[in-house]
Image (cartoon, rainbow, N blue to C red; front, side, top):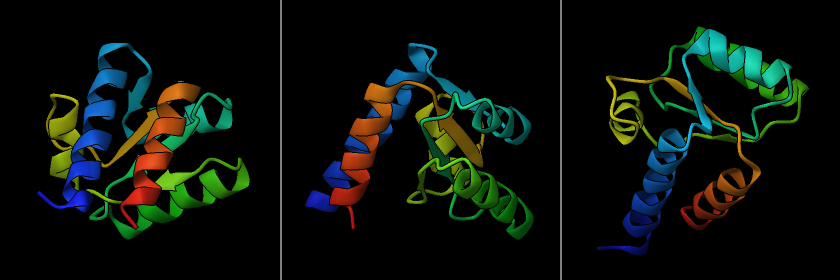
Length: 108
């Protein structure tokens, strides 16, 4: 297993733990609300999101200074939280967000 795959697996595991501990919001409208309310600490956006969704989420995150991780497709994001496809996920815990950002940087 490559270092890149190892970091990706760890990041996705953190997403699953965030879901189990109720530190995760999924769905476009709920994520936008969490960004505007300063609850979102980091947003995971699917690489295969529609251009409209990508622009909306990117603009909101830039305005409210929320980092975005774009490393996975919608199927992988959904699988990580035990759901169907998910295009956008917000993490609401500082600790999870920090760990995810570290893992994402190691993947670059």
